[in-house]
Image (cartoon, rainbow, N blue to C red; front, side):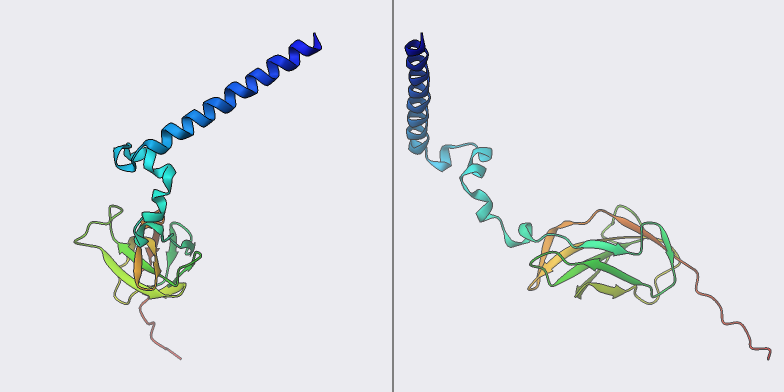
Length: 157
């Protein structure tokens, strides 16, 4: 009985090894151009991505989502590995309509809101930058509320 078990185990391992050898030999005969697009990913196609696709977006930190801020408040984010700055995209609408979008390229990890930004809700997101190249991927959309500037009160003293 013991001999039968060992013989069946050896036969099963042999079948698996022959199958793997035949499969890898068959796979090697295919030309990458004949394979479907998803199959080329397993052959290292990620190494051929454009630089912009490999740049990770920064991580937004301050202000918190929906926070009311004074005009000229500071936006702060954490840079990801391999980045040296960020593209800040500001929009008064959540859809970042191109005709209302403001883009500001920033070296480092912080920026003051531009002067003259109207009071109300503003949406912002970030894209990573590396040596002048801007990443394709953006952070999730954040919102802040710019408060009305306070009028100077007269000094009665």
